[in-house]
Amino acid sequence: MTSRTGRHFLQIPGPTNTPDQVLRAMSAPTIDHRGPEFAALTVRLLDIVKPVFGTSGPVVIYPASGTGAWEAALVNTLSPGDRVLCFETGHFATLWQEMATSLGLKVDFVPGDWRHGADPEELARRLTADTKNAIKAVCVVHNETSTGVTSRIADLRAALDAAGHPALLLVDTISSLGSIDYRHDEWGVDVTVAGSQKGLMLPPGLSFNAVSEKALAAAKTARLKRSFWNWEPIIEANRRGFFPYTPATNLLYGLSEALGMLDAEGLPQVYARHARHAAATRAAVHGWGLEVLCADEREYSGSLTAVLLPDGHDADKVRRIILERFDMSLGAGLGRLAGKIFRIGHLGHFNDLTLAGTLAGVQMGLELSGVPVDPAGLGKALDVLRTP
Ligand SMILES: Cc1ncc(COP(=O)(O)O)c(C=O)c1O
Image 1 (cartoon, rainbow, N blue to C red):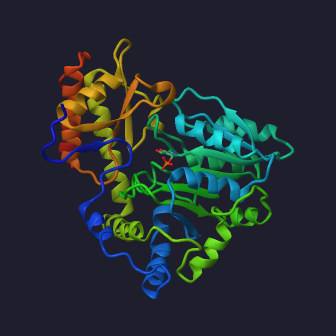
Image 2 (image 1 turned 120 degrees about the horizontal axis):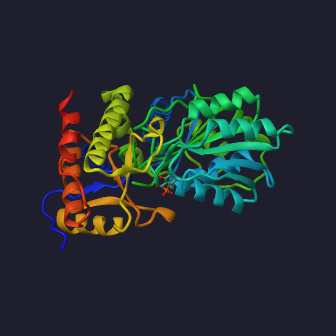
Image 3 (image 1 turned 90 degrees about the vertical axis):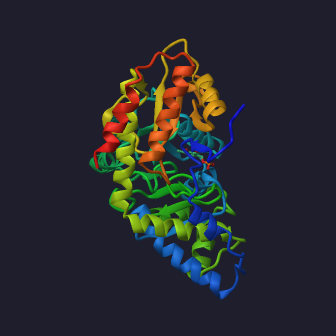
């Protein structure tokens, strides 16, 4: 039976632990979403949310999970029958392309092995072959939460530019925003899709589209049907500090607080902290004698690590034992990785000792599950953490 004293360790790669000060901010009384106090909050939020995306353009906020923001990115920019190029980096990339297909888009799905990110060279080949510019958008999951692999968006952008191809670039940053370096404007991204429940340290329930000038222009002629997701009336109402529907008032209080925390730490420091915790986690995994799922060190994720178990060992059993004995939740293997891997989330509201405790729990759970591991693994992580 799960022991429930002290705090539960929520080490899945999102939803992440919500800081107490964010929870406290969200517990303030709900105000009139058509009143002046709310308008002032919205205008300020829509401004202070921009740096985390690396944009000076508009950011649309939906009271929805990340899946809604995926749909918004597609329906605002594309028309029925448009060709889109998607990369099979893992479970979430697969779900996004299924959504695109179900909306009436023609998807070219570049096959992948779920251990690598989207390949800039393959993108260059596909775009160069597309002499008639039939491809209208390229969809990439920046940080594939199901695998712990981060695609190199700057290199993908360079491939688009080198090919002189006009396709829009749509990027899912649901598990990278606020934890892995990201630059919407500098990387020429047209729509950035994000969610509240990971690097932004909020509960689930908000999602985002950061939108480029080019995407706004595409929205004028895009013919996919849209109503709730339509950017135009939202951006219009936002100018006055309002939304064309009832916004998630208390989540917005939380967003304001969380953005303040990220700003106080400094985004470069936030990214460096995540990269250091990811390095310490990999040191433990390699020290145990196990394999990290990500096969290219240029693509190691800063926000989560997927651990591959040796043949004959069940990752779900390891997770179950860790939950029952140590009250810690780890991410399951999704889709074709079910039972083969578990995922350690090390993002959001997180520090050195949270990671040390997490990795101690993982090591004990592996030992109790009969997975052969070298117990020196934990010490390898502590060596990284000991170094400032
Ligand atoms: C990379 C990625 N994209 C999309 C989603 C779907 O978001 P949601 O579950 O908030 O709808 C997730 C959820 O974990 C995700 O990690």
